[in-house]
Length: 397
Ligand SMILES: Cc1ncc(COP(=O)(O)O)c(C=O)c1O
Image 1 (cartoon, protein in one colour):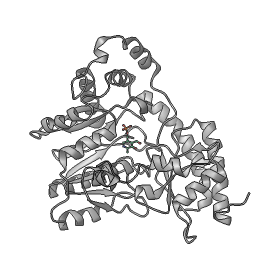
Image 2: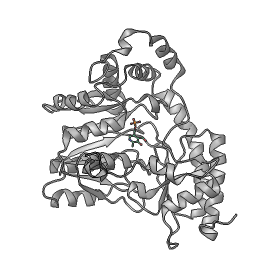
Image 3: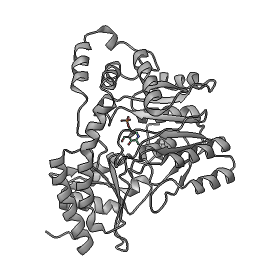
Image 4: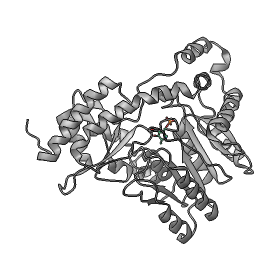
């Protein structure tokens, strides 16, 4: 006992979080600016923060709350789901962020040994959640080479040919790491394919408000569909840890089984955080979209910085806070090496595509910096990419 060999095989076989790997990649890089982490630069609404400041002494804040969330928050979310997301038959469970919502659902819907489907480039935490819950058969489908949209023809084939049928299919809309938005017709087709095959569809809507160029985010509903949402990015509440699950009210037993998982992980999401979420929600979606609109400029700045990679190399960015860039081929170096080099030589951090199942690419986040800081970071990135394209990974100074 007490040796590495006695640790659970499930967790040992799980990928190392990329944010932990980044610490190693960035070791030695001084004064490095980040276009890596998926965060936003703003804080929660001031009015909401002021209100929770007054609440901290209330004894209810320090007690456990109802497992599935403060009743007033759940009621407000049910209303929001109806009005904004066109979800009319969904019940709500509040979680400690969308990541915990995802793990809750994997534990509620899948057994160890089941097969599941996701699409490359995928959200690394979703992949790891499958790995650590004993799902070893993770089928990773392709995205369209032009748009990165999940390939529904491939899905149709996989769902009809795989025995047993994959238990769950998951997509992120708009996507992390690509920022690709899934058009309503494609989402509906994916949903229909899942329904016909008897698979669950889990849609991660963390970036629902982060849409650009007049595009509109939409959701699908059905007794085979579960949607997850997050307060983290929309309201600048990353550290407060609040997300939620919208699950089909009509599916017998869903609420009861989900509650078992919830009661054994957080019991309930932090009570003070739930109050902040409720008061933030009262600000309305306009509060969020006003801030999201400021990111249009950031996206333009980063797009310009990626120009040295050449036409057609940059994809996504229709939504979320990410652009997805293909590295020049034929040099034999890996995306991890490029990330280390950019950080050390040019002082700018980005995420290697390998972490998302697509080596040879980079994920660049444009949400975490104000316009001026973004400009400074983008300048470094541009300089680095120009050097990469012309001279490769030169090391001399
Ligand atoms: C697609 C996606 N889902 C979930 C999360 C995690 O969100 P939360 O902070 O609500 O756990 C993130 C955060 O980057 C994300 O990009």
